[in-house]
Length: 181
Image (cartoon, rainbow, N blue to C red):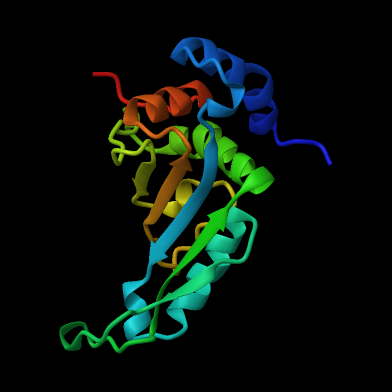
């Protein structure tokens, strides 16, 4: 099975470039992307049990694999929420699907955002990156129906970088369009 385009780019170009750029002697120490997690919270799921099914199908289209339903951990009376109720969906991508998703995100979806200035360069302290997208209709797989509801999408990119600086350099080499300061 042939590799995804970004995976091939990483192994042939980005990895040697990072090794030189970060001054790493051991090839195994070069940072890499380990997984990408997509998460959608569905607040309508509390009152409408069918709302989560539509979100489930669209996240499947975007990611290329079936997501898991996330359940409420505890009951909150103010939100009419009971423990164990489905309140969202999430999917973890690894390997080929992860690289294909990143390719679509960086090269197709993000440039479609109106008035796009770049994504913020804020990491979590360990080299992992979180990105919130307000509307999932920027993905080419999503057909926009006027009747359907638009949801936001949280994308977490886990890396083996260890530090924010290394994580930033890794994602910048992949072509992540960070804001210029």
